[in-house]
Length: 636
Image 1 (cartoon, rainbow, N blue to C red):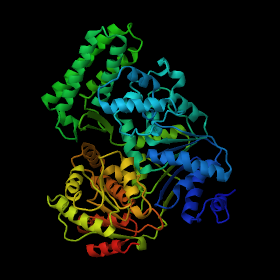
Image 2: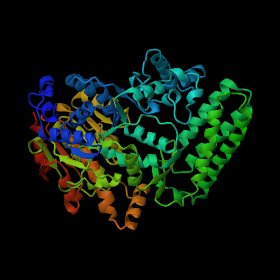
Image 3: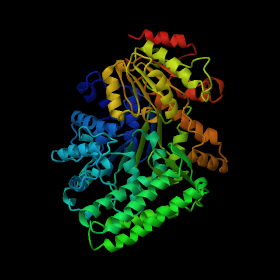
């Protein structure tokens, strides 16, 4: 049956899905994906919200008798495709295809580590002890070992490092539970499936492993489909580079301490060495400023305090290596961490060599940890190699790929030469459904009075919208300042990112139906609130990456050296794509109505403001804040 017929008024979709209406852009996209699969070529599609892009790529995949891998940017979409969309379409099309869901190893329960930690409780933290009991109960009931199914255990639960495995601590075939290993079972299922649903991180982790000549994590395929493809250049950079984190060192220390307590408690020297290394690792983090930050690693190496702290960690790892050598015949569990100690020591020694060109050397600190990163500035050549090596078809789809009606920026970033490309506008009637307000008389975004002005605007918007508002920020600092001024000044419930997990906050926001949600980067995308619960989105400023960001600085410098325009080629396109993601939270359905408020004068005062506006949906625009409030008040 032809693609066109499947999507027609009398086709199987219309007959089986209540309210289904054929849409020409959706049909065009499906035909293009089908053509790319048939002739093993590249296809890039920007499909505006509401186009139905998911069905437009799933149907050609289901019609193909070749092996397909679908990669998404978020676990939420991964789950939706596997549990809802694929089974529904396979039934409608009467296609009996074997489908598998494959996640990164950190998502699966490791029964060996769970048993070890239940037997030797790793901590006296009551949260961890309570969560261990919950996971132990889940372990007796699960078939997949997917920790997302464990009720009460959130993505950021404290217990996770104790009950999942990492590439650093997995024992592989040496593990006593290897036969029953959930990761192994999931991979076997993926090998046997026709369609495998993965995420971008797993795709690149797999490519990095294949590069190093080890066994792959997932099967090869004939077709690769990337949804939420705007995330790929950034994720690819992380995987094609190298990084070492004190978090990995802390996990290694915890694993070794467990072996010490359970298998060789008389080896007191090992216990003392681990304590000494733990202190050195904590001191290395303390050598940096207290708050979370990013900085130039080359610059850090000019600090004697930081160099001394790093040398101490390397020296303590070296001593630990010698101590573990003496323990090798005492416990068969020592071998794997023994090799890891050497690997981490080598990585930290390599962090002193910052001479390689084409890379950015930068660090990032969180409240507890430090990560040292060596990131390639350009991944186009690497990605091109992957495409050539796999000899498969590649389709890239997202609601936000274009800048100023062109896909060149995205194509260039990954070295793509797509045979098929398409820009599909959203079918929503933005002109009648939404208003974009750029309020007059606001201070500059960097002005100290800006948070105060944002509180004032937000109060009025929330009142007019009867709650039902997203406040999206580009920095935690401003978000917290606005929260302080707002949380007690409105009658509606206010939820802020960080108070709980993203999923729980979203559920609470939707359940209340008249709440306010405040978030930074992670709430700008992958959040789908349809209907009455959301009528207003306020964005504090244009989402340019901070000019102090070391990775951005290195990319701009590299761009300059190769004759490019750093602002035009790097900063502006990325900010436009990020803004489009935030704007996309407002209108998610044909019946949605709402107001978008962007509190950044540069949209009007700078020449590049026009480039931003041209890339946004065609909403009615106003600078009169009162008319925006009026529109909100009149939404039924």
